[in-house]
Length: 347
Image (cartoon, rainbow, N blue to C red; front, side, top):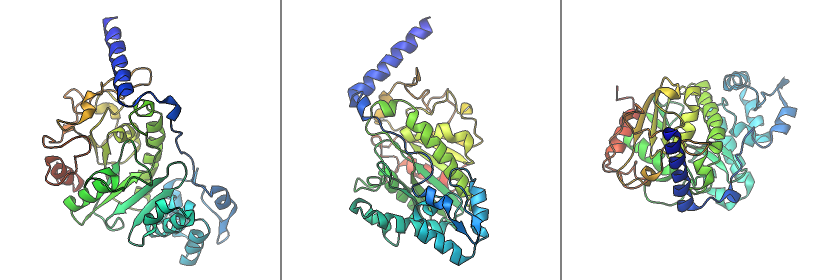
């Protein structure tokens, strides 16, 4: 009974912290964007070289890769022209086709907020304009990379703001650029805003609903990388993104999972993630995430602190990290350690 009582008190404290930070704001709860991309109905009704097209909802990424391998270049280009939103988001489709399809899809929205994503020098691996918008961008040469890392961000990220002008090395795109610069040219880094993130630190950030939907999408995304022959990735999971990674862990082929600024990963221990990946954790001394109680009760909270000794993750040095988003700042111990992990230099 005393343990139950302590849990209730801790859960109440979690509610108080979240409510005091951003309000319960249940009316602002976000609906997760799930399912196949816009244009799927027209895609399903079409054919290529007399063959039915792979169902975006049911075909595995490997089946998609095999389908495209059987098409000539003309048939591939026609699918890009006719169905850019589907091809651009189809896990297992050739990378160059996805980049081209997403340039077309972004331009077709006619929305100024997305215009920069259509620049010819950007490698947009996924783009979905539904809701607040989702995007994945590649920094480096993914087709020839020896190592691949994926940045999985937390709250307040979408297709419009993930690369907004901010302090250097913050936000998903800023983190990706910083990691690639530190890790070197043989490493490709993907800024993956492929799920509906919470807004602020309210109810959506305190429960796991959006993370559960995001975990499904992240697992399929990593399967898509595998289907096109990319190296097994390292997942760098920030804040609420570490909840997504925790739930997706056993369904990915990641070599390493790095949680930083984490409120918890919905597991009591690293072993509880049921992954073959090495699990790492970092938290800076001034990161406000330390004030969030590490509890999961009645769906609220995300469980144990990944930086605690009991959790069992490998620790990443972060003594010089400033705030909640400073982990990729130039010269920090954390960035140096992240780069070593990304390159596979740590055994």
